[in-house]
Amino acid sequence: MMMTVEQVLAAQKANIETLLGLTTKAFEGVEKIVELNMTASKAALTESGENAKAMLSVKDAQELMALQSGLLQPLAEKTAAYSRHLYEIATGTFGELTKAMESQAAEAQQNLTDMIDSATKNAPAGTETAVAAMKSAVSAANNALESVQKAVKQATEVVEANFASVSNSATTTAKSGSKKR
Image 1: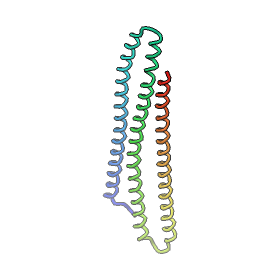
Image 2: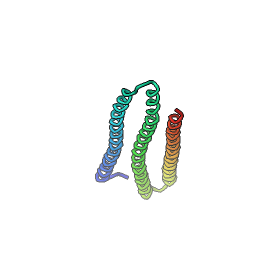
Image 3: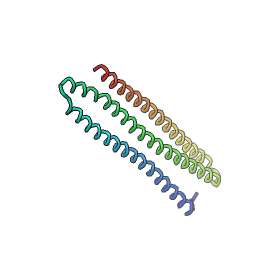
Image 4: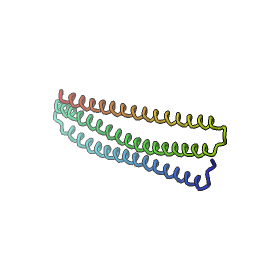
């Protein structure tokens, strides 16, 4: 089956629109990360100044030790919060990109299936075996792609659960460590 010039142009236009959409989503993720880093940097700069002033007002070593131990818990909590936020941005952006690519893959699969169906209607007699083999190969490829997509989703869910567990554990450890002092 030959594609007409209009069909080729429409396919190219759709591909360009998809590429622009994916690029926009990727840049939105980068913008969120830059914003997070700017906010974290401003906060760190402000806190560093405040901590330096507090250390300069310390009168003895015991007060210095108490001040330092009091700074560790908030630092650990802020680091964990930053990591969680960064992870949320990354997974959200990746999820949007994945969803868009899955949609495009589904559309491409449907177009291929439609093209094969159209070609088989006009196939000469005696090519039924070849047509059946081609349909079987396409079906197997679609099933394999679906299996891979499911495996990736399951792996992502496991990674997210592990990240949440480690993050919560680190925050709890930091809190308990600062309370013991």
